Length: 58
Image (tube, rainbow, N blue to C red; front, top):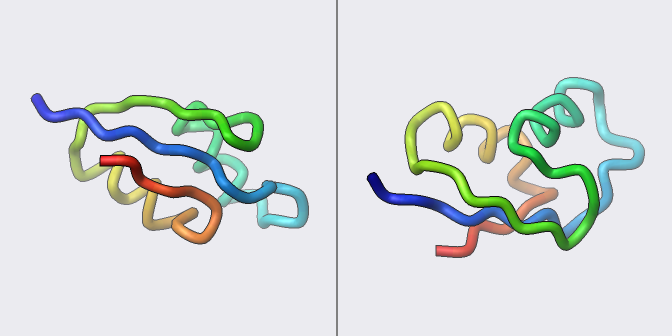
């Protein structure tokens, strides 16, 4: 299956709780961290929730 890399580019400070939970679910706890996940619809939904805080590295 294809994988996708996600990097947190902005701080989570001041974000609503649901966005913080989405970052936690993605495994992003600090800025400039990169995580790798399988490319599926549930991961894409989490990315869409916090698209202003992360960058997708293809």
